[in-house]
Length: 150
Image 1 (cartoon, rainbow, N blue to C red):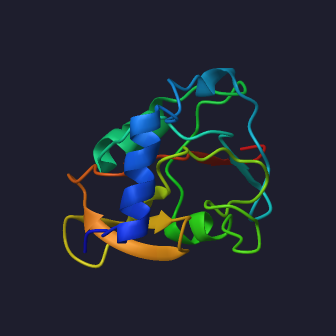
Image 2: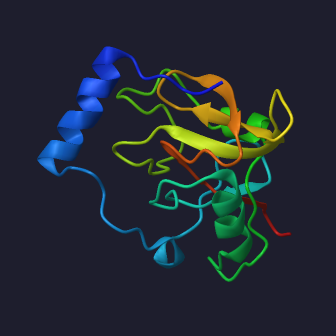
């Protein structure tokens, strides 16, 4: 299933693009990892700052070198949902000062999706788990995670 933005979300997205508010290139390698969500997990403090398909998201995490660590990976759908907190004010409800893009709220997981050739992704705007084709990169990004001390 593909994510369909509501009319209000679509207008907001278009306004952000037109106003040039979208975040510039990320330098995740220069950021400090964050310990939030499930105990024993360390997260990248920012997303990959690019609209990617699942293979690109997975490769980004596998090739990431951050905080002296090289064992980064895409999180499971449960791990992504574990950093969601609907009580946090604003549009993107994520714990621990993790920085989501200003225009994207959906993040790929490593969990197989509801059909063959799909993976689950998590939407931090609405708190939904959705499944999409691995090759579809529209409006999805990557957060990377690793086991602390691992």
